[in-house]
Amino acid sequence: MLVYMNIFIKAVGCFDVLVMSFQNLQTYDPFAEEGESNVEGRLVHIRIQQRNGRKTLTTVQGIPEKFDKRKILKYCKKHFACNGTVVEHEEYGEVLQFQGDQRDNLKSFLCEMNLVTPDEVKLHGF
Image (cartoon, rainbow, N blue to C red; front, top):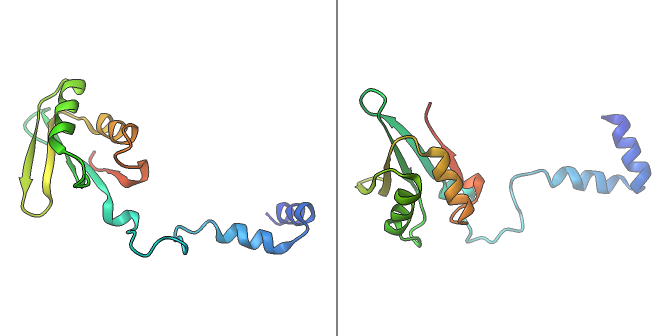
């Protein structure tokens, strides 16, 4: 590591640049707008639940309110060849529920359609 630092310092000619590059590895953005929430507050949770035997349910919770969950459900049911519904949960609000293990399909769909970023999606189960 020290050899690489010396090479970097010789190439750039300044130790301050090296320190600044290490400071940029932080997850906290000091220049972020004050009103913006961090990723923790807007995570989309995709969970799988075992029913009976080999039957499973996939639930999606935390999709932002600005998106119509019924349209998302309709698209996913058609393209993933599964059934699904929107369930009203007292703690989590509207939750999408699909038959079968659709975790990977749902994550790729949400990211490809730019509904959420990949680091805002959290997969749970098995």
